[in-house]
Image (tube, rainbow, N blue to C red; front, side, top):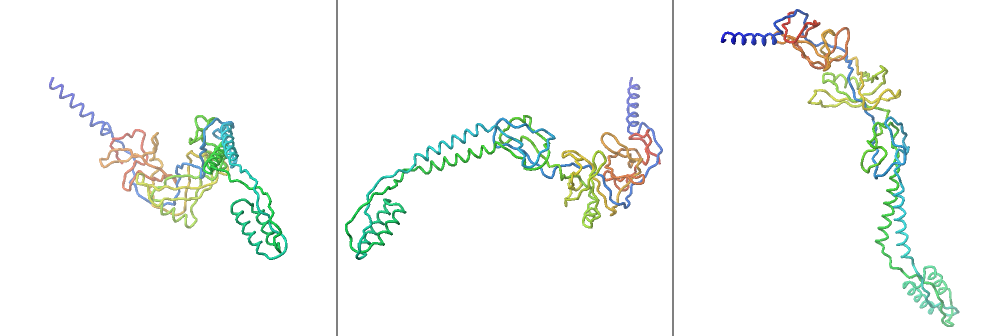
Length: 391
């Protein structure tokens, strides 16, 4: 029994070694040591397309919509009415506030009383009596017994008379009585009227931009104050955002300065739009080692939709030292591109790579390989990880 137990353990150990060493198999194939060589920059990269201008439609008040609800894909123009909330309750609020203001203002309507005042003296003689009369008129005016017009007229009459007084006469005038006004209440009611009118104005929302509705709320028939009802995005120009490997940054900056940079955005149909590199980060993303870039372009043919991914082609005759491998070395799985490498133990392993453009049967490796790595140039279908590789 003990002998049998040791036999089982020995077989198990042999099986483990076999698995780790490619089941004890080996394969003869061509390998290549990775090196760099100078090539013109030609990159085709994935880019996220977004609108240069977008706006969220956010109602300032709640209510049912009496307008047709916005729908995804709907085209709108700047100034179009895109939302009309039922204004009836807000119109009622305006009417109530205005009625309260009118009532308060009516209570403060001035009243008038009749008073008797001396009339201007007439006749010839000196002007002493007239001077006293003018002083009396001024006192009456200051008391509020005379209006400005009455005061001026009577003062003019008093100033024009001459000679001695021939008897004092009187006249009756209407004098305004100052009502007791609650100025603070009136001001508050005026503010209430303005606030109600502002709320009524908010029942109508206009689109601030030309664009397309790209998102709507779960219930687009009801406005909820402060909640996004819909999103409108401008369809042209658009912005493509993507990442550029560090080794290309200097060449692209130089190419942008001297005008040798060529940029195009590729639609699913293969058609393209020319773009301009409008942003290139000066610091790299530490998590990826790449630099963010943005390209702005006109969507004149309406080929692109914000929120989707497309390819950006960016090229310049300026050369950069790059790693390339034979096209036959690159394999693809659901997780992406990879190559087989030969590790220090002479065994096959797999390495994920980020591939660039292909030229003359060779593919640029943007990331995943270093100089000195050994890759399998044309791996046979029988090659598996862990197999011994003979070149």
